Amino acid sequence: MIEILNGIHETIHYECSLGLRLYHNKNFEDYPEHWHGGIEMIMPTKGGYEVIVGEEHFPLETEDIILIHSGVIHSLRAPSLGERYILQFDAALLYHLKEMETLLHIIPPVIYLKKKDRDSLHGSIKKKLDKIIEEYQGNSGFREASIYAALIEIYVELGRNKVCLNGSGRQIRTMRQQEYFEAVMNASTFVNQHFMENLTLGEVARISGFSKYHFTRIFKQYMNMTFYEYLNSKRVKRAEELLYNTREMSITDVAMGSGFSSMSAFNRTFKMIKRCSPSDYRKIRQQMYETEE
Image 1 (spheres, rainbow, N blue to C red):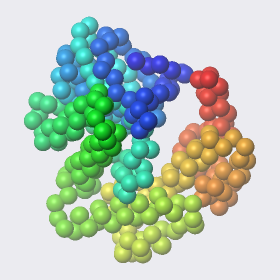
Image 2: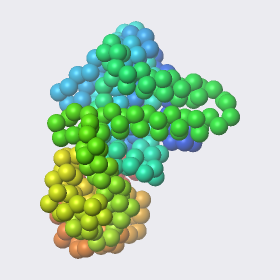
Image 3: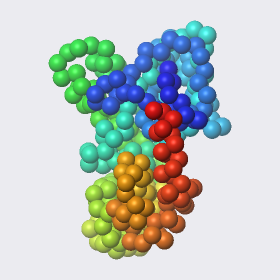
C-alpha cells in the first residue's frame, strides 16, 4: 500500500484529480511507523485491523472507523485474513471553506468511532463514507462533486460533535457558550485570511466584540492555545510552503512573505515550532524531494 517511503515520510500519489485516493486493502502485511501530509480514514469490512499512534493502540473491529490527521506518526498491523477500506485525501481540499481550516487545525489528531458503541456520530460518518466508496468505484456524472460534498459533510459532523466543546470537554449547551465558540471560530477565520498583516491581539479582540482579557481567556479555552500561538502557527505553515515550493526565494523574503516583521522573530518562532532553522528545513525538504524523484 505504501508506495514511496523516505525514512518515515510517506508520499501519497492521489489517483483522483480531486486529491483523493481509496484503497480496498486485502493485504495482511504490517506497515511501520510513518506519517503523511494527507488525512487518512480506515474502516475494516472483514476482520479487524490495528492502528498504533505513540503508546496508544486502536484495535479496529469490522465497520469501526478511525480518522488519522495529517502529520500524525502511526503504524498499522493487519490480521492474516481481512479487508478494509483506506481513504486518503489532501487536507487542502477543505482549506478554502470558512471555518474548515480552523477546524483542521484544532481537531483531535486521532478520532476513533466504534460501531458497538451505537453512537449516532459513527452511523452518520459511516453513511457518508459508504457514499464516497460508492461514488469512487462508480462512474456516475458529478462523481467528484459528490465525493467532495460527502467529505465536507463528514467534517461538519466532526466539527459539531468533536470540536464544539467547552474547556471541560463537554458538548456546548448554553447560548453563551455557543456565542463564545462562534466568536473564536470567526476570529480564527479572520486570522487565516489576514495572518500576513500586522495583526494584534487588541485588534482581533475588538473585531470579536470582547475585551483583550476576555478574548484571551475564551480563545485559549476553545483553541487550547493562545492567540499569538495560533497566529504564529499560521505564519510558520505559510513559511513551510514558501521554503519548499519557491526555492529561489531568499530566507528574508520568505520571512516577509509569511507575515513576520523581522528575521530574528522568524528564525526564533520557526525553530520553536519546527525544531530546526528555516534554512535547515529547506535543505531537508530538498533532499526528500530529490530522493522521491
